[in-house]
Length: 254
Image (cartoon, rainbow, N blue to C red; front, side, top):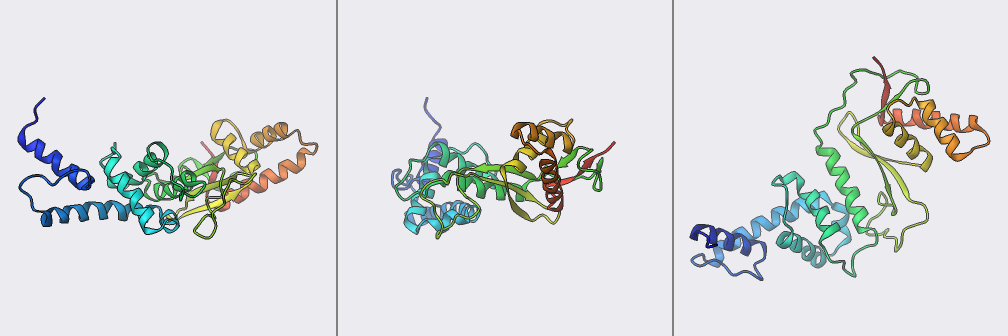
């Protein structure tokens, strides 16, 4: 199928901007003018990715960083037209399209995902509503409500401590259990939790009929703990801590 001349020109124009080393400048446009577009578009995309993944940017030197971003810019076919979703597109590129490099840190994908979560929560239009929630309710006898802006996550690598001076070569034996959350002041924070607390949150999210005590008793049976009172006290302490951070909003009420 033959394209109209203007469409052919548009495709040539954008192909050159995305990958000037492989695609020639369209006829009739001088290089000086094209250079403005080349620099403007690439710098906008690169700047947004660098700000969305600041730890990754610190880890890579300039040459490796720009080689990776230019490959994304040239070859990734974005599904979303929204600028705020560039970071999500970059995650897709890292997971599904990019060839691994010898200079990549171990845990690259997990670290990138953790940084993306921080941005996603920061820009989320989800709101915290206290409608039908009792902030002073009994966390054991009633159903605790998890904030919609609290995301429990499990990573094989300690992504919350990784940086240029702390890059483990392999995943430690113990995964990292985190809750990344946005508080009522719209600040994104993380809380490191243990596997039992992570299971507690999971049960409360999975079964909306569970009270706090139901979830704790479920865990007690799973653990086959010889002293249920110890698990109950530890579970209550975990629920109270989660509420202090705003990860649990309160309890459900009519």
